[in-house]
Image (cartoon, rainbow, N blue to C red; front, side, top):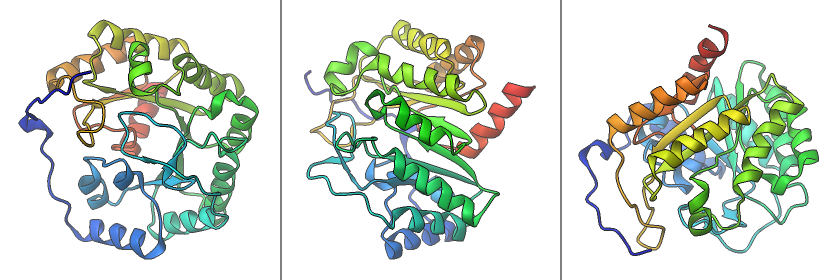
Amino acid sequence: MKENHIRKPDWLKVKFPAGESYARIDRYHRLNGLNSVCRSAACPNQGECWSQGTATFMILGTICSRHCRFCNVASGQLEPPDPEESRKVAKAIYELELNHAVITTVTRDDLSDGGASQFVALIREIRKLTSECRIELLISDLQGNWEALSTILTEKPDILGHNVETVPRLYSQVRPEAEYQRSLSLLAEVHRQDSEIITKSGLMLGMGETEEEVLQVMADLREHHCQLLTLGQYLAPSRHHFPVQRYVTPQQFSTYAEKGLALGFAHVESGPLVRSSYHAEEQYDASQRGLHG
């Protein structure tokens, strides 16, 4: 697809990172060698979230086994999981006094369980240190390994997220190693194995999808028991990545949120700068009101 040089609108401007809390989290990551999707994925909300004292940790290294054209996470030589990673991340969550921890991962198709055992170890380490912290996971599709998924669910994370990322028509162009139906099936499998665990997914808009396609994906997610939805604007990390096709207006994001709630999502976080973990704690609280009135 030809590169699209579209001027970025004013509503996508973000504040420069600053503040005591931002500096504390930034310093902690650097001193302890922790990986954060905030940096690796070039998230536009890093300044805001860190300034508010929240962060998303990324486990299983910084190198992904897949080659999605929208993602800023690097691909390359994969290394064995760090046996100390779970302890270090749990210690960080405890010492940073987080009430809602979000943990995501690079995709590790080279591992027989897709990295599920590392999630299990981390949840156990977190709960050794604190019973107050809510745990939200954002996992890969595990290549459809539902036994591996079951080991994660046995540890009872509060939220289990897996992003479909875009509409199925664009998969071959932007995430050729993924399968749309497999992602939907994972969300349904979470609900089948443990309906008490909240399921969550997300899309990035502006890659060439139509409104009808977005609404169909939203309907598909509801049919597969997804309860929380995030919708945000795709921003190409560099000129070598898949180009932005359009900038979706804040008004259109609001319309999608309304239609998502009408479909039965417990909460829809929809806006140009929204990402999976953006306002994650507030998303959870809103979902509880949506699920339980």
